[in-house]
Image (tube, rainbow, N blue to C red; front, side):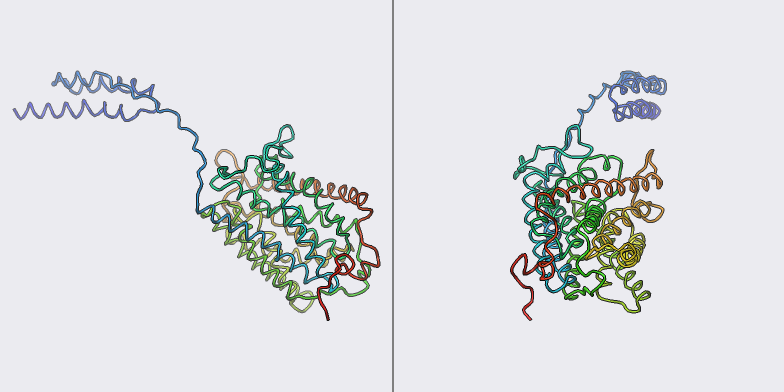
Length: 485
């Protein structure tokens, strides 16, 4: 009896085991019967003493039906991500008003304090309306034959952006407003190049044209599905889209408008370095929304972006400070504040991909190189970039964009570069970064010049009169004074 039971147990074990294996391995479904049929003879051979078990083993297991293809998951709203993006949007808006407005206001002369504040505030209002009416659609929708360069018209006047509309895991309205704050600060940065001498009316016309012809296309090329994005450019938060874009436009404006009266002959000292330091501090805080917010989620990448931003900014502030100390013999508040902004600019494209040591290297490089650009290069070439928009933003943006292609490499502590066949390629990524930089410089450099010529015709000139410039733009253009001394 024991021998019979033992034989039955062995038959069940050897006979049913392969059948169970065949049933478990059901993907793809059409191969399951073959596996069962192959397994069955083995089971039958092994279980010869037990006829019932052998018969069961010889019967192919019914093939399981192939699972239905999974439906593409629909976007669902994430309240945590949404809360973070609402906060980030407010932080980035805070960068322009009052952050950038104060940063610039402290560096101009007493008679022009209100004019730069007014320009920043007016640009904020103007771009908000333009972005809602058409610029958002041009930047972030799919175009037709020109999609590589510019988007389409499907979301003109905010069409389709309602309570239910989502962009990933956040409301599209939040995404639209977050990107709006980037579109606001970018033209506002250009103000630093032509401060104290451009007509207010000409500024408004130029910024309207510039947002349409320069900002929206570059934004689309990099972030909106255009050709630079498809090539794999790394620009996490706007090294090309914001800083190189604004910086090269600033240089063109400075060259076309010419120097301020008395530039190089009389001292043009900042009126209130305290304003500049407060403004730089506001920019530093707001930049966490700028960089960490660009992840569009409250996750680990946002955390590393915030970490890289803090580290690079500190490194650049020290780099500029020590460079200035060595060259001029004294470290200044204006210098360390400018260095911090240079670091913020440079880490912008790399914040989501560079590790902490890469952030230190990028920050130090930006601090020293931007100091040399804002002092030695400007003096050597003789252009009047009033508040160093080109020296800090364009040069800092180029440094950051190129070094992103270096320090994104995992071998240097980064979090990945463009690669094929499962591996990363340093050379491929650096090449893409160079292409992105050159594209932005050429597109916006040429475009800005053409737009200035159009603006000159429309407004009857770009500059205020010599009398208005001498009196100061606060009184001559706005009828107000920043100080009553």
